[in-house]
Amino acid sequence: MAPDPFIKHLQSHATSFAAIKSKQRVADHGEVFTPAWMVDAMLDLVKDESARIDSRFLEPACGSGNFLVQILRRKLAAVELKYGKSDFERRHYALYALMCIYGIELLADNIAECRANMLDILAEYLNIDESDDLFRAAFYVLSQNLVHGDALTMCVNTGEPITFAEWGYLGKGKFQRRDFRFDVLTGSSAFSAEDSLFAHLGKHEIFQPTKTYPPMTVSELATLEGD
Ligand SMILES: C[S@@+](CC[C@H](N)C(=O)[O-])C[C@H]1O[C@@H](n2cnc3c(N)ncnc32)[C@H](O)[C@@H]1O
Image (cartoon, rainbow, N blue to C red):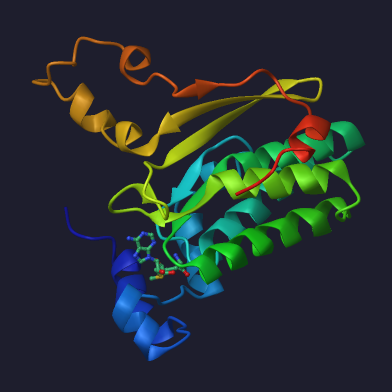
């Protein structure tokens, strides 16, 4: 299939418009950042998904979060439209929106910046600071969802396999968490290929969580220690 002319246009301009921190970092880690206008144009290609509160996004080389930040903004706009009239629902669905966003980043300074950028946006939207349980719960969620690791080896910086938390909102202020290994999740298409030994199995038989947690409230999440 011929590439969409718009995508071709974006690709041909990507290098000249991308921002960099240093030439050395570009050479060592391919660190170039996508400008906001291009992020928005690319997210417009998946407009409905990027504005759905519970759609899950993973950016495997998230840098300081240029894509993730815009996805969060779009999800929060959806929260405002749907739950803006109830403070309780607005707060819980804003946290749930954050819970559905994931990233992996190799460099410690970039992942720290990414988590801080995401927290700033949520805090500004809800008008909260560290004195609020929801702020501390969000801090914890970001420490779990935005992983300091290597997307190619699928391991965290300490060498263990990356696991991701799947969050669900059960309603009435309760969140459910189950953890899954990233390397197993990425095997999804191979497992379901027609000639695979596992093709006859349902996904639930292959994708078993490594851990299932009891339902948790914002106050309980706020007491947990992040990475
Ligand atoms: C091209 S930048 C893109 C950053 C962001 N996605 C953006 O568009 O602004 C690539 C980022 O990927 C990180 N990176 C490079 N190799 C990686 C790997 N194997 N796993 C995770 N992150 C990686 C770099 O440190 C850098 O921050």
